[in-house]
Length: 352
Image (cartoon, rainbow, N blue to C red):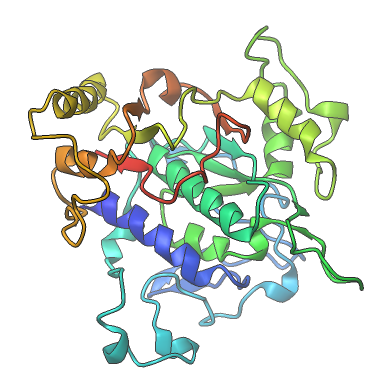
């Protein structure tokens, strides 16, 4: 199994299995020293990373605000890799061996996209449906950000359909950090970075680094606000649509996203040629999604062209992460009638 394919597939499934609670950072992981946490009430993720041997600016204390009572003691880290049902009160590993659909490949944690640049970002609008749609859309965006080597910006806290029902003083506005072990995912994957919307707006918006795509002029966040938790998010999403590039046509019902194997322009050409050859019949008839590959899937480390044939389903377009998209500082995935990454399930992303 290739490192790139396995790393992203494992993140997919482990998000599902671990998306219940939040447990936070430790000092050691599998014998590897991790920088000690500061003693102040909050701490951050993904500090002190380097790209091309250059120091990346360290996130401020607001990057992912982690309450001090959630900072874990040494040895209490909640590892994402190597999950065991028995550790959570389920059946033993032998009994579940036929049902486990992931493999723990330690080298996957070292995967880094060929496009890795923590100073390029992805923002997104959460799905407006129920929790399952919200979760699927988030997991798709997470994998896209990792495959593209971009820092993932979490949306502000907001009400989620049905999750805020009932009276009392319980929490009504939620962030994805309330449901997923984002700290553990980021800690265990060298090429993956996450920050909050507040940190992003402070770092890029308030400093005039986000520009209106139509005019080219610097555009500050609405009302100079950076903390949008619990607010009407329509305003901040409208802002992000103005300063962030939406990959036009990336509709999962009609196309699939294809991530090239390198920055070399020939990798983009290779993906397009594969797609054209498939539709020209070079590899046989166009697959029937109701019949072909049933009980006979293409291996996850199979040749890209065969994985591409399997992913076609009823789609007739390929959406390639080409140089024009690679060069954008900010990609923003909106939600409207023409764009909804949760419209289908996971078979949306092909990594060459």
